[in-house]
Image (cartoon, rainbow, N blue to C red; front, side, top):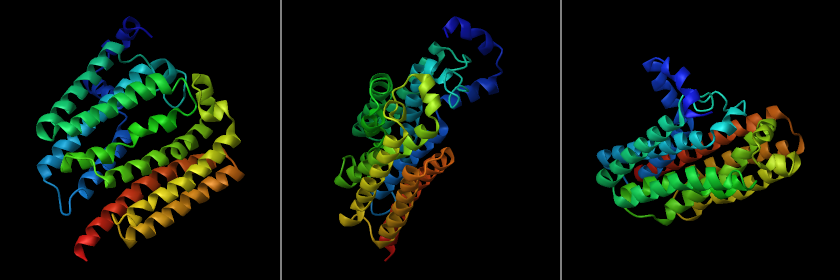
Length: 304
């Protein structure tokens, strides 16, 4: 839909509704998880509590740039979103916000976040965060997503960066511990997203995107979800093996990993849309609780 056609419904929108439309563009639930993982990286980067002013500035800067990337994603995928039930309600897909409005909004958020990170945190964190923006909003959304069914695997590298950003904000460098956290999210992303793609397969078929369930079928995708959970399980043991965490984290990782593998196994052998939906939801809890366990273990180690 052109900017001109989208102007009319937007003009009649009240200010509170307009603010909500821009807020929706930032994909709040996705960005919340991104910021959560970044904050975990900040807290793990120092033995005690980090400087709260530095941590607050880094959190705000990362949130702003992540929100900018989400808005830019909505801009690029306006037509795709309009064909999918899952995303057709977005303001860009409905023509409630023009492409120009969305681009300016994304640009302002990115500029504000980048400036905050550069002047209040450190240049390394700014450059890494901007690289993540380019990786997600341009390389993944524009190049990979419409080209290959492995888009989520390759593009998952940008989505795995939040703990690295948090670590760099506090330490001013990227350590091996941060890369382990990055690897965990990188391997978590495919089974998480493919579980969603399985029960939203018709949505993706209408969109024209070459998602794995469309190009290779449901059974092939389900097998890969299961195989990735096995590799992910091995990766989640690395914090304990490397001495980054202790027994509390190890027990949590084993229990959470066993649960994810069990869901993936059942999904592979006895598929249903309801089970795929449950697997997707569990994957979110898996990552959230895994990183929470890392944090608890970190401070338990300081007390003992």
